[in-house]
Length: 147
Image (tube, rainbow, N blue to C red; front, top):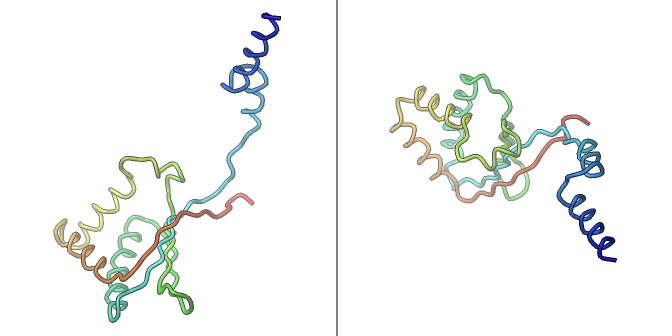
């Protein structure tokens, strides 16, 4: 009886820990779906600030272009509570949520500062942009790329 119990415990541990022929076969058949992950920013502008916000957004777009990027989607909303919905592709996929620092983001920040008069001026533009925002929410979503 003791041998049967030990065998059952061993089989359970092998299955739960992913060690052994059954677990490794299951792991080999699992595949990640092909998806493109996005940060979705929903924004409501302060009264009278929409035009200035979009002037600054043009500077953001110029930086994207200088980086060779063309995958940000900017929706100007006609209905609903949000004035703008912006989808920014997560180049590192969902895994980038765990990064301490995003190398693409760091490179973009450096290019933005270069194109806009240096780090202090870039910081001031970001602060001004934030002042244009009355309310915002950020969500994560994906597009099924391989289907």
